[in-house]
Amino acid sequence: MHYTFPDNFWWGSASSALQTEGDSLTGGKSATIWDHWYTQQPSRFHQQIGPADTSTFYQHWREDIALLKQLNHNSFRTSISWSRLIPDGNGDVNPQAVAFYNNVIDELLAQGVTPFITLFHFDMPMAMQQLGGWENRQVVAAFSRYARLCFELFGDRVQHWFTFNEPIVPVEGGYLYDFHYPNVVDFRRAATVAYHTVLAHASAVRAFRDGRFAGEIGIVLNLTPSYPRSQNPADLTAAHHADLLFNRSFLDPVLRGEFPADLVALLRQYDQLPPTQPEDQALIADGVIDLLGVNYYQPRRVKCRDSAINPAAPFMPEWFFDSYEMPGRKMNPYRGWEIYEPGIYDILTNLRLNYGNPRCFISENGMGVENEQRFVEDGQINDQYRIDFVAEHLKWVHRAIAEGSQCLGYHMWTFIDNWSWCNGYKNRYGFVQLDITTQQRTVKKSGEWFAATSARNGFNHPENLS
Ligand code: BGP
Image (cartoon, rainbow, N blue to C red; front, side, top):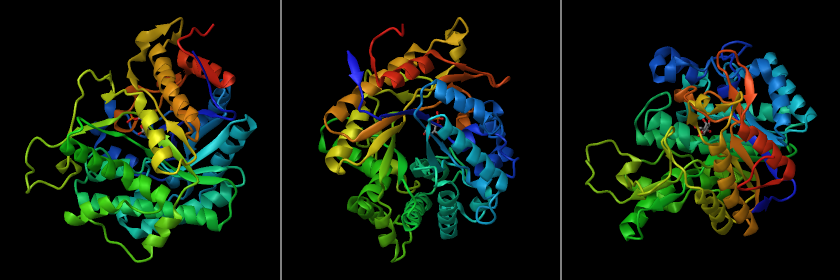
């Protein structure tokens, strides 16, 4: 069967500054929370590989952009590092950073690759965290200034901006489940962080529109469809609550300009609402975006709780649901995530039917696999499983588009194997293999497949490359 995509479909991949640049404390850059946390607890990082040892994009940007072109990318998302551009978070601009990002943007354009730029991808400058990070409104103001400076410095060439990548993740990781610094477990503080992140997003959107910069501005959300175990009302309520807390907490403000009334009522009932100010509402309403990036890796399956809540335990999202393991589910055992391709269709369809069919694209989708060396054939990793993974997801994207979704592209996570936060280099996601000792890059079979798919604006599946 042949699958053809609309003209000008965005074919590309995504990465982030902190996961690829390296030089994390040189070139005038200051520490992020990751550099700091690594000095405190190196054992939290797989094989104790920290944020200084990423895939050297700061040194090898020119070669890497040549590889993007070789893989027929017409677009590529990466982020600007706030702590590289403004080392103390709110003061002087670092000229070395300006030169670096100018080089990257100019070279991408010279090679025919449209730059998509994220402003914040989990990498809070330590100087800002010392003020309290997203718990402090001063940091919201500093972010808004940083965003405006980015638009002024690079907005003559960058036309696709994203305020945040997966803003719920630092909330979950840093303030609920202890997988990001500052390793806090406290729902009310998490709610404040989430709320201030929405304000930061909206302030950047406002700055973009006030400055009348060319192009468009959006956000990248990891949308995780919540599937109930059954149609029993208690299971449905569990799924509704999970959806409110993990998806709609960001989706509604950025597409509808307000938080869901059910979510506000729920948090009020449990006395978890963050402090607000009267002018916030108008700001949030101004944060409605032009373009939504959708990251999709896995579904969330839930059921109603089997046990009573311990009222003395910390208030947590899990007060409203239990996780549910669906019999027969297909797993990516390396990452421990379920693979469920129709989920990508369900997200796009939900956006079309319930959110006015916004302009959107798949901004991340991918499969991290351990020890890919065992798949080397004639010097190349034969990652047929990754080709199948992409193709099976793209079939559902294709169907959603045929039914009217305004999905404009598909970006894979990721381009070159990169550093995955606490997982270091455990799971590899790239179209291009990275030898972490020599930094040598070798295109995997999936990279060739993707290049051919982009060139033909579609694919046959199953098929042989030849
Ligand atoms: C997304 C992030 C990426 C990336 C990816 C893979 O949530 O936006 O930064 O890391 O997931 O996940 P992981 O690295 O945790 O395996």
